[in-house]
Image (tube, rainbow, N blue to C red):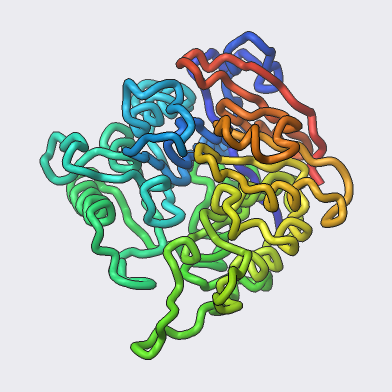
Amino acid sequence: MKRIAVSVLSILPLAAPAGAQVVGEILPAWTPGTLDIHQISTGRGNCAFFVLPDGTTMLVDAGELTRSGPRLAPARPDDSRPAGEWLTRYIRHVSTQGPSPRIDYALLTHFHGDHMGYVSDDSTMADSGAYRLTGITRIGEEIPIRKMLDHGWPDYDYPSPHDNASVKNYRAFLEWQQEHNGLQPERFHPGRNDQIVLLSDPEKYPSFEVRNIMANGEIWTGVGDTTRHHFPPLGESNTVRPTENMSSLGLRLSYGSFDYFTGGDIPGIVLEGQPGWYDVETPVAQAVGPVDVSVLNHHGYMDSMNAYFVGALRPRIWIFPVWDSAHPTHRVYYRLQSTFLYPGPRDMFATNMHEANRLVVVGLDRLKSDRGHIVIRVEPGGDRYHVIILDDSAETYEVTAVHGPYESR
């Protein structure tokens, strides 16, 4: 059964109807029964903020790259603040909960800096002195998080011990927040549809569901809550082990007829010399099936978005969370637009396309949008949705384009 996700309230009065978005004006407030998905553009990593139909909130990733250079697109709105600070300010603006917002669920797809925040000696220390502020720890320092889900808790030893500075900093954050602010860390369990649920008024939205699809190579079969292990057993004799990207968690969110998928950085193209189980996308696609909206895996790098995955999910809308000169590669973009893989139209939206890709990858000029915050606003009941682009050059939250309505399938 499909289930609902709710939208985000902005600071505008509730009298403004959620469907009345107008180019040149500020995005109207979320209203109950609406699902909003905000793919936030900072040019320094992935972050998506959700408000579910009853006002429950969810965050997926909070990246913060500390480096810059010709491979990276310019920071958005600019580099006067770290990405985690821009993310915090955006979430506060669209929060449904007034001046003291909370995040009910926060998820890290995997432990890379563009999804969780890199930490360095230059990262600001938290007031407690227990950890440094970057990405998810910056957001959690300023906006209380109720439940934190990842694929490593509590041991953080798969596929190998996570002993780098960023993960150590994140674990210090979890420990301090659990003790002092009641944060509940929890391991993400593939197959389940009861780990992320509506918290305020679930009976009113029976068609809402978040289905946990995969983590650490454990993948939902599509039947009940059963899973199967895609990776071979680990052992001392194994010379080839799963990578952190391959271990990403992912989910399918459903609301009535509307379906959405996000899957971190899982690969699907087996490169020369790699074992076949490096293809995580194919078994994931078998479980997920067709959706209306999908986020690119691994930002569209050369090892992602294989033909089976593209054809099986066949979304009407592709979201490109991009900021690097290799996001996406030419062959990936070819598959995404190929009507040989699935028929019919599809629209593509990018957060922050690098200028080099516009020059090198043929056809990127046909994207519906190549810069800005991307808001998927699903109408109550889930039958229709719009894609709304917000200006990311300043904190105006001004609508620059409205696409749709699209009919959910």
